[in-house]
Amino acid sequence: MDISSDLVLLFADRLGVFVFALSGGIVGVRNDMDLFGCIVLAFLPAVGGGTLRDILLDIPVFWLSDGASLACVLAGGVSAFVLHKHVVRFRPLRWVDAAGMALFAATGAAKTADLNHSFVIMAIMGTVTATAGGLLRDVVANNTPLLLKEDIYATAALLGACVFALFHVLSLSQDAAFIASFSAAFLLRAVAIVYGLSLPRPRR
Picture (cartoon, one colour):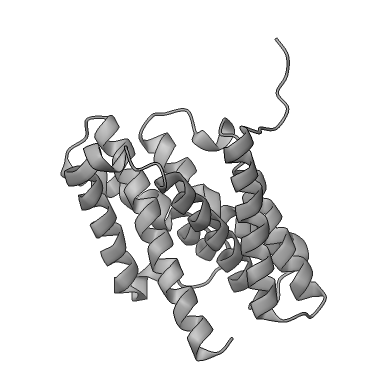
């Protein structure tokens, strides 16, 4: 990737961290947590998935040397605590969250590809990066994990990660792989939001 695309991806990654931190902070507010609790819950979805990915890949955890990511987490948590009445009314936040999910799925797969892992591992790590943080947030908040009941979300992340892995296996452009991965994940999530789609559930 050239310098300009790297800067765009860096900005998008920071935005994704902030939005996920905001979502975690809102969960903290809804559970009557104090400021510290809101910041803790902001931390989990924002960097939890990437942390788990790096631990599984046996590489340095990214935020240990990236103070900007921690600053975005802090900003998201504090914003949720102070402005929660306005944030919960901000319907486009759901779309920004979808974009963050798609972005993290692509970046997780890309980071795994740089380590020369297989198609399956790229797909798994992309999905973990995009969804594991939210799972940790819900477990800590003692809520039923959204990942297990939300209309198509993890499925969209898996699709995006698989698309990146396919492009990488075929030795296609990394820029094209990233764009295709992001687009596939975001579009599937968008269709699910607009039409209320979900995966089949057992009949009782």
